[in-house]
Amino acid sequence: MRAEPELTGTLVLPQALAEELDSAARQPVETAGVMFASVVSAMDGSTRILGRGMRWIADSFYVRRGVDHMTIASEGYVPFLGEAEKLQAVPIWVHTHPGEDSWPKASRWDDEVDAQIADLFRLRSGSTYYSMLIVSPRPRSFAFTGYLQSEGGASLRFGRSWIVGDRFQSVRAFDAPAPDVDAAFDRNVRAFGGGIQETLGDLCAGIVGCGGTGSAVAEQLVRLGVRRFVLCDPDQLSASNVTRVYGSSAADVGKDKVDVLAAHLARVAPETRSRRLRSMITSEAAARELCASDVVFGCTDDNAGRLVLSRLATYFLTPVIDCGVLLSSDARGQLIGIDGRVTTLVPGQGCLVCRGRIDTKRAAAELLTPGERKRLEDEGYAPALGRVEPAVVTYTTLVAATAVGELLERLVGYGPEPRPSEVLLRCHDREISTNVQAPAPRHYCHPNSGKLGLGMTTPFLEQTWPQ
Image 1 (spheres, one colour):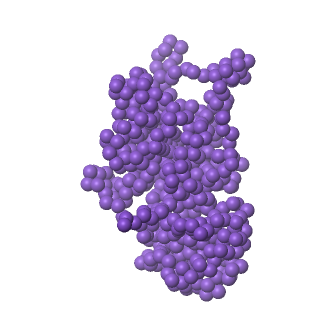
Image 2 (image 1 turned 90 degrees about the horizontal axis):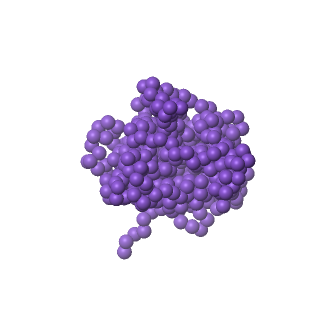
Image 3 (image 1 turned 135 degrees about the vertical axis):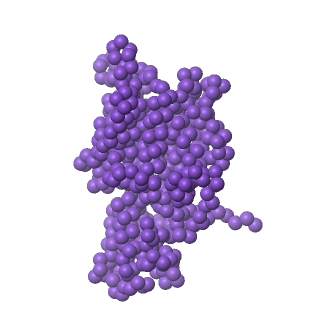
């Protein structure tokens, strides 16, 4: 009889929280604390555990403490369970196994402790889950194992962690099998190393907008080794799209863009899995589908869609790499400007609203029905929409390559520090510049807002959705 596959989930950590875990793991004695997390059940059936904060046990509450043992008074951690309840968070019992040669696997004593405190954790926090995480130091990061267990339900093992911030890092759990890297990626491995190739193979990439820029992003990702995609676009391929959309031909005109792109990705790599969303990202149902993504590329040209992506980066700790291309002409129709932009949204960086990259009036107008928009335009209360912007494959491809390059650099770390969160291309001047934008005080993307890693909310992303 064939065994059922083991359930696994992804532990998503802001870089600052991962650094706390790494520092604790390097202490010479066992260290413990409680992590606050949100559990997200994604539409594709996967589970993501979003780290929100950490509370460490004060030294005075350790009754016994050594390199391979510890006993803690309950007063040291029970108050954290009440805090978790106020935050509507799942408390994760975290402790370390010190030493770079140690195994971060539960001992018999660890199992006994879990059995003793699981009900207490659920009762005092109001959570239906009990969760445990063990970390041990390693030269470049930390090794870990962990699980999430619902009351009376199945246990879900942490299969990997996805760390997001100035750098991106995927760490497979200590007890997770290592994948085989296909020999076809030999040249990639020579450039980046086998670990990066494994990470690319683990990623799920969301692409919002499957036109000239989005298809160029997908083309590069699938050839780099990414095998899971969420493709979002409401439109059908037009004759003019064929001049820019990778994988398309004249025979595809009239087909849904997501179908054209998914078919192309499958031709490149038959094992590729693509979830296809024939919808605007301003649809709540479509936005929810992106929760399964490790990284999202924003290749849409609407302001309302960018508002959604901007919030997604904060609430779900999902890096969003937003792309834009603008070709400008003077009054005579002469091309005078070719501007590209790639903005990376991660915890600790300002969102697209903070940067002034979203026209909120146009975003509101884009969500109106045609009748409402026409009435408000006539009354002067809404900006006119509908202009078809120029687009050329050379420049959509350039911006797409820059966006994928940002993903690679944050995985590999070959660039300068601190990393910029925006790259501006001025092709007409043959210039490239970068910048960094801090979150605005009291804005949802600010670390002090309490929104980082909040996960599922009512309403979704705490915003109003069109009916």
